[in-house]
Image (cartoon, rainbow, N blue to C red; front, side, top):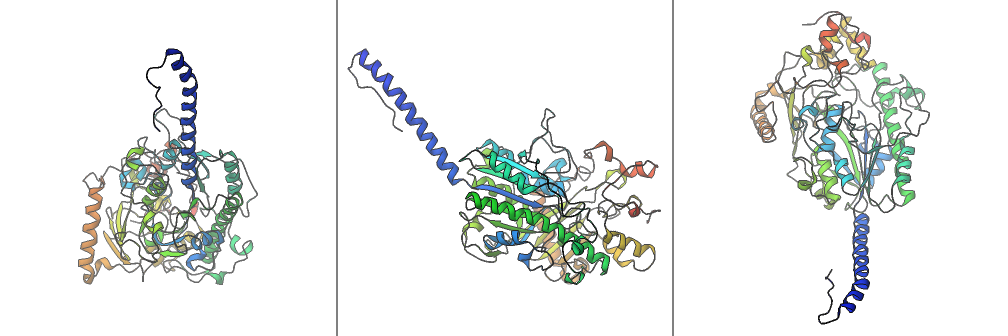
Length: 543
């Protein structure tokens, strides 16, 4: 706006009179212009709705063709937006996976937050915190970044996903399902939202995380054991396992029911078209050999994204490899926030807007041809609170894994209950089959020790049971994948690859009650691990 000036050669009286009239007029014009800019900015900046289930593997949604899980909400987002066929978390456990989402960084770049149940480092901002500082109204309900401790440098709790909305409660459809009325809490958030202000909301259900009401899928969900088209080859195919899978499906449907209500609420308010809706999960299903590991079923997750005002040619299926570290860069870009000036630490993630603006099906950007994955410590249960370190790369449907400490038990020590595998009927079946001598193969596949390298063609071996790393016919491919993985990990400053192999093992567990679990349990202390069953603990060491 041009600056107003007084004509020369006039008397002081005229100058003063004009100042009295022109200055308020100038200020009013300036304020109106600023308000107009803010209003236009708010109208153009999309709202961001991030919806995340707790422990759900790809392809367990109707849009992917799975018929024993009914997900009309997810299917709508995929139908009216994009369905991603190759979305992966870098680390298949709750808090490290969610740390990648909120920061845009791989877990080996997040110091203590690489581990499960850590003290979240003060230095790393979340995308929700940055949106809140840049004009967004931000809130959440359910499970956000967790479990662990996230505090400011002054010891006050950080709201990594915004202001909590938890007041509304409803009778759950089965035991162990949360009574959080997620959708009603979202409505409360919308009622609080100032008119004309863009918003961001995190809907994080605690379903289908365990525990389950055994038989709920059949007895309350109307499902049949024969609905399951296939039981994974590393589990026994029996009534117990199938019931367990259907109970898992019933809880996914609870998450999706609230998603349907949230979408309906947005549509009723006329806010759906300019809302970027992302629906995914944090890690794979809470069953042996999946959650807490780094196999195909552990890290490969459902993902659908809808944004009616921002996605060209909806209804496409996308074959690009997408990592969870791509979410935060996407959100800040569509919000008009410069990442480099935002206060976020550098991210190797890439915004998904190139895919949004394309009209291609299948592979949109050939550069998105791989993702990196890995883990350190998840649940305690090994001597010295050690983890089970893995790094991996998935490229062109080949998964390569390097297991760094093969003398350790992948799922945790047997004598302390295999703590990195949640207690479940399926887990109990597999443990008992070994104990009674009926079948040791399932136990070896789910809980046994592993070689230093593994490699699988996931398109034909989603169960990851045919290890190609020992096949000389794949030696050259294995060398190429390992070299690329190590090169990129070095570029990203991974302490383990740079020579500090004990860094993550030495990071303290967040809560005193869980530290040094192995030593305390083996010394006779009555220490609880509520996520496993008492019968999971072996009566003697198995090595």
